[in-house]
Every structure is written in C-alpha cells, then in structure tokens.
Amino acid sequence: MRAFDYPAGYRGNWHRHRLGQIVYPLRGVATIDTDVHHVTVAPHRAYAVQPWRPHRVSAVGNTSLRSVFFDPRGRLASELEFGIRRVDELLHELIRRAARELDEPRRGSVAEQIETLLIALLIDAPKAMGYVELPRVTHPRLTDAFESVWEAGVLPTLRVNDVAARCHLSERQFRRLFQENTGMRFTDWRSLARVKVAAESIARGQSITRAADDVGLSSPSALGEIFKRYTDLTPSEFLRLNA
Image (cartoon, rainbow, N blue to C red; front, side, top):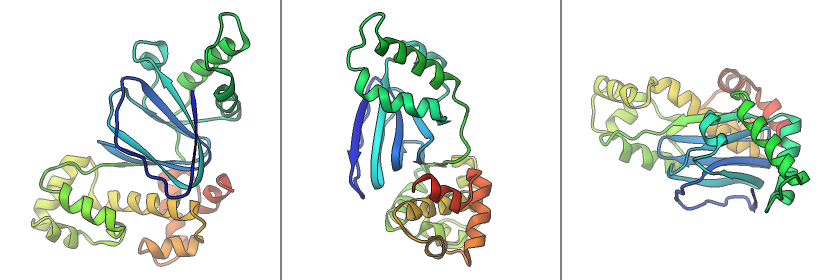
C-alpha cells in the first residue's frame, strides 16, 4: 500500500511492473491511461490494473491517491475481476487506514487482520457504474489521428466525417474499422468521451454549463442525459462526490 498526493495537472510517466495495482482516489479524480483504455475514477470508485499492463496515472484537480499493490501469484490476483470496482464506506476506511498500518504486518497483528479483510472486500467489491472507461483506439490506420485530436482536446466535438477525413478513410471504411477495433460505434464512443472530458472539467471546478459547452453539447440537460446513461450518476451527483 502506498499513498500519493498529486497537484492539479500532474501527469505520470508510462510504466509497467510485475505487481497488480489498485488505484483509488480518497479525494479528487484520477485518470489512468493503459494500452487498452482511458479511465476516469472518482472517490468510491477504484481501478484494478493487471500485472505488467502498461499504464500511467494522472490527477485532475488536487488528488490524494492510495495504491494497493499485490503479487500476481496471490489470492487477490487470482480472484479479483480487473477493471472498475465500487468502494463502500467500510472499504474506503480500510484503504485509508491501511496506508498507515500495512508497511510490514506481523503475524497475528491488527495490521494483518486489516490486510486480510481488505483483500476479501476488494474481491467482493461489485463492478461500479459511476465511472468512465473509454476503449483506447489502437488500430494502426486510426491511432495517429486519434492521439493528435485527443491531445488537442477537440475529439468530443468532432463529427464522424471529420474524423474519417483525418484518417484518410471513407466514412464507411472508418465506421467498420472503428467498431472492429473498439467494439463500439463511433457515436457511442464519442458520447463516452464527452462524459469523460466533462467529468474531468467538473472535477477541476468548471460549472456543469461550461462543461457541457466544452464538449459540444447544447445544454446542461443534454450532458445530464448522457452522463446518467454511462455513469449512473447525474453531473450534480458526480460534483457532490468530489466536494
């Protein structure tokens, strides 16, 4: 278990390691990029990264993170479902406490009991809804164009014909390759990208109205509709999670 406090705008380096890792923000919002997903998690949501998976962790706003590292040969690795998990109040408190207690738990100690309970609760934690897990575009005919517009922050506002033209493909070719690569239609993927970018804007202190405008939506209610569909939270509920 390790504790990290990151300032707003912190961006980690790409790396990988033999240990699995559970990334959990006690406060603020974390983004985790892997070779297959762009992920955004807020408090009461944790992201489990597989051993050896290339990834980087960044902070949206001032963020206090806890990372649970675990051996790929242990029980947690064999029984945990990787991806986003929901963290209830008990698991939240155990993760917070474990950062102080679990340096080297002695046999029979309170620290060892905390570790045992922590592992059991992480394994039983249900799949979360209040999160954004965006499939990464990796097809060689698509990835350069997507990475450039993603870094520029304009992708959530682009139409399918604009992106197809950037990839030097017809709309039909683009739609086919995109769905084969990501498992989603581009319009659904763009909606999820809008939710991800809007969630990060709200976490940085932007108003919901401004967040909707930034991702090319006509009103806060339009943002609220897709936000609720993909995260099971309204933008206001997401804002209260990070208050």
